[in-house]
Structures are given as structure tokens and as C-alpha cells.
Length: 117
Image 1 (cartoon, rainbow, N blue to C red):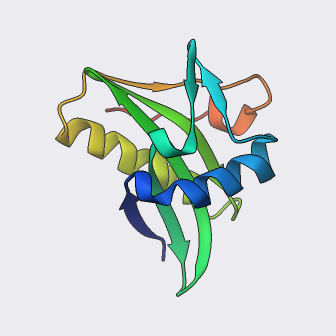
Image 2: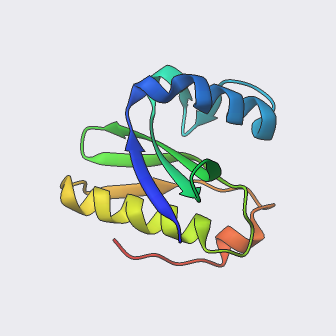
């Protein structure tokens, strides 16, 4: 079972560690904006009492929400899908007009996904 927890900016230390380990630094640049760990919110996926299975970070600007990063540490277990579906539900609840998810060509599994908000 995947448990999801919404975190605010207090989670910046964990976000910075994941970004360094998986993305090579503690900044993410997307759509002309520099994102820092202390500026994003996150959704943490866990399986069991202490195993962190995934992390989705996001930023809201006006009526748009952007998924800044998506990391699944348990491939083929539905973690990434659960994080994206929860983000889409949050976007709907919060009245966002748009949910942005920018990918690169290497993200073939993600590029074949489809989630409706």
C-alpha cells in the first residue's frame, strides 16, 4: 500500500538531498524559472513505516501548478502514478487552471502516461 503525505516548504532538506542524488544539483530550472528546495511543496510516497518510495515536488504561480520533479524509487509499483494522480486531485481541489509537467525525451515511461485533471 502506498501512503501519500503533503509537505510544505519544511521538507526542503529532503528535497535537496533527492535532487542532488537524482538530478545532480539542488536547483531545477523549468519553463524559465529557477526552483530551489525551499520554494517548492512536495508529496511524499511511502511504503511501510519508513521506506520513502517516491517524491513529487511542485510550485504554484497564480492559477498554474507545475510539477517540478517526480522521482519514484520503487519502479513498476504504481508510485509515480499515485503521486501524479494525487497532484491532479490537489490541482482540482485548489482550483488550478493548468497543471504543467515538463519532461525530457529520456522519460519514455512518463511520456506514455496520461492523467486527466
